[in-house]
Image (cartoon, rainbow, N blue to C red; front, top):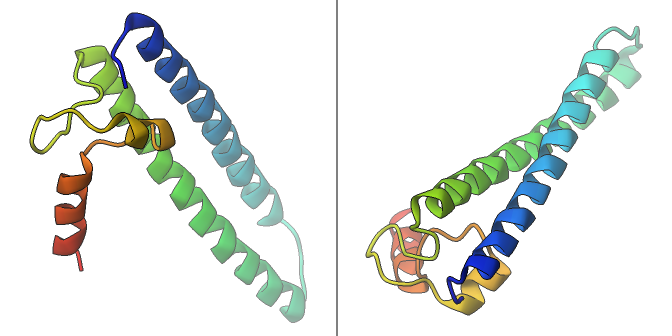
Length: 118
């Protein structure tokens, strides 16, 4: 990715839009969960509600993790470090940033990080 002012502004705009979308989803899920907690249910409904709550909690956690990635990418943008690997400092491949704008590592460092977590 070329780090032109225009390209970086486009990335920032996309990240902020996605951040707003995710924040809205999290807020809606929390409100929905609060609303459901006041309902009276029988055992079958309670079991179904627990299952739905578990799925919703997993989705919310995924959204919160993505929000953290977006915030980190926005911080790198503000610091002038966007597009540089946080591990080795080398540029992250443009194709990688096009697919995953929040990428913090180059592919080599990402592979190494993933092999250590297994």
